[in-house]
Image 1 (cartoon, one colour):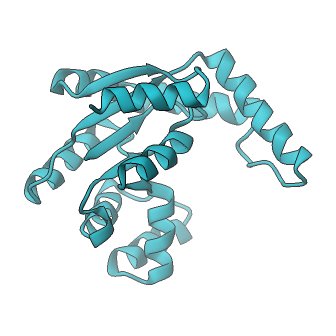
Image 2: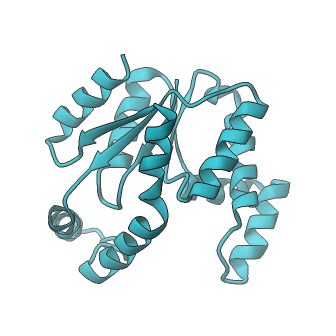
Length: 192
């Protein structure tokens, strides 16, 4: 089972990816984590990514697709995977489609997490307060200004994927603001 979790920052994609991956015996893949792992492992594509990041530039779609290609070829991804944070653009979606076609795999479902912007802000602020209360440092992007910037990028570049995957016939939309257990149940229902 190969899935994409799509939604704005703070929608709960990472939380649900971990739960669903464990329930289904598949792997949750975050592009940021994959990039860091490829750099740390010193792979060819990881070294290309490191050079770009060291210059303070954004990693190209070609490099990200290469890292995803290498990662999903690993044995633990054979039963399936959840992509969290990728694709972010229509060009990346087309490149992912081509990659999967080339290796004889396909996307089974794209789960869209629908959320209200105001509720997202409250969720992000709560996450920061919870981190502080637990004696941890909150994420640098857990604040209103960072969220607005991230939302703007999401609406500009990533939101068009909703139409793209709707047209492909594999988009399922769920209420990302429901309690965690209810969101999990809705995803499980959509995957039957």
